[in-house]
Image (cartoon, rainbow, N blue to C red):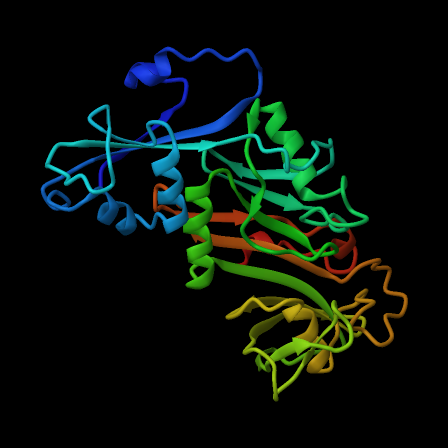
Length: 331
């Protein structure tokens, strides 16, 4: 489907934008996507077309409420409008600067990739993703808000993939609601492939699969355990890349995404991650101050262009000291 991307500053496209003036330097996030209707897509309603493009019900509802959220050839249109060949459908995604946004803080994190639709961050260990009690100003949300402010942008924080506070590595942040809904659909369909790297106690098998359901371990609200009676399905694959000093350096990938899945499964098979003070019965003195787990590779389809995206984050220093591995060469 032919389409083009238009920045909000391209005011010549629609008269709506030519009359606007902003006194503030930081602008709410606005994204305009345009679709040239072809013979193959003509004859259907705007609603049907948007559903084909994976716009969620909530995003479509918001577009209906947005001033000039849906335009056909420059004219505000209803979703019941029937598309004709050569029509130009324009979608205006407006992201308000809400009062619930995280407080911007200049915190260290590396931007791996960024465009108008998403940001891929390399999160350091020790940084929570979302604010919570006791962690209101030291999170990835705070760091991303500061980064957006530096770029004169403002949008709600929507992190697509979860990472534990002490797990380092790649996190995808959606910059608008459409990007978020498409990426979350990919997560549910397991189209976002994540590769992790870990250091485990002992010498594991060369490769293996751990198929063991996971449930919350009562009465804790944090700890998880393998529970074949009431747990949710969980499957982890691993490959041993190296071993030394009684430790194994592993590459792992998941079929499911349960809380603490890798950490629970490695403990279950007798090879807990070093530094994991929650799941390692005797963490010892490996030098690791947190679980040795890193989200090093991501592949997914760009929510707007549909192109395959690949991202890579090198091993952090604390893991490199034990296994100086170049994971960039890993498929």
